[in-house]
Image (cartoon, rainbow, N blue to C red; front, side, top):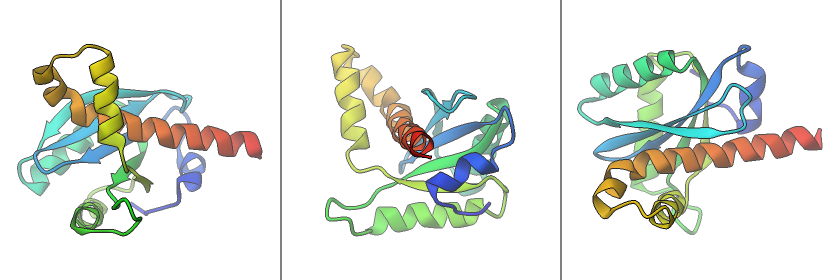
Length: 158
């Protein structure tokens, strides 16, 4: 699985494939999947983290169900743009995952994605308990939607 720039993802997708968005947390992995037209991100159930191998198997099964052809993963950079331990952990996860999959991966700056996702859930009047259950997948959808919107802008510019 090569790490690529976001703009390099669409040309690598086979026809009919989707993109997955991931929000890597310490207890869960938020997951979202695009439509085949790469316009809309939809949250999927979170993957409860166990051990790396089990996490990877769960993700690969989810990717197969949704005909995923590429991955956008949130990179948790600090507000000043530097990379701390969480960003290093995300990069390490991808280094390990690339041994198991040939899917191309692009990193996406996820600053404020969880905050934005929580605001949307609050606006939708989702209870605090249900927000806790859905926040990581909502953040993954927010990450993926940002990437999809950027791809659309790049496409219109060309």
